[in-house]
Amino acid sequence: MKGLRVVFATVLLSTGCFCAFMRTSSSETAGAGSEKGLPNSFFAMDTIFGAPGRVQTSVKEQAAMVKELGYAGIGCWGNSSNLRETLEELDKNGLKAFPPYYGIDLDSAKQEYHPELKEAIRLLKGHDTALWIYMTSREHKRSSPDGDPRAVEILREISDMAQEAGLRVALYPHTGFWLERVEDAVRVAKKVDRKNVGVTFNLCHWLMVDDEDNMKPLLELAMPYLFVVTINGADSGGKNWDSLIQTLDRGSFDTYKLLKTLKELGYTGPIGLQGYGLKGDAYDNLKRSMEAWRKLSTKAAAE
Image (cartoon, rainbow, N blue to C red):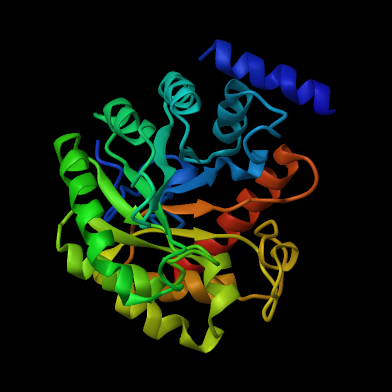
């Protein structure tokens, strides 16, 4: 069956706008929201296909899978050669480009950001998407405001480059990094004070560092700056990635409650599927998660 699926994906390929960070049309494909579901574009992060150097599927196959299953597009690792190929395949298949992932190092002895970031901005011009930016430091403790001045300086430089290309900058809170919490991202975004700089709510990273009871107050805090949300199946109380990153149909965490809260707060921007470290077949993981998304989205929209 897996072999037949690859053949089908190849056939699909051969027959081959603003990304709506704050608003998405309900008349788009099922992955981008439908008349019966939420209006949010639902895209796949390419982490579901594996980490760089360990990916077993080509970008062409990845695009075919997400198109077949109804995803709105792909968000990818920040590698210029991979990004170039991904954008080409997305364009061929009528799919959207969602944020690629890049890092900033705040330490004085380090280069602020990888040179490929400038090339990525050039490649992304005209795709109306965002850059995901994570931030690290050894000089500053996690979440410490002591790193804010340097972070603001670098982000304003990136913001200017992104603005010229019609792009946004979405800060990416990541467990163990200097920018670890959503609150950190909001604090820094406020200080940067640029319209094209906002934040991301990452379900798995939030669950790792916070209490679930804080979900709604945190989302209310982030809402004025919220550009992107990522979700996946997860277990309440989980403290390792096996329990905090599962397919969307698994896990004890109430993902429906999260989507309902986002709807109540008026969030209509894109929602990505996190799949880092998922075991099993990527196509099956994507399929299971899309089926779960449609059920959750339809239920939330109905209320």
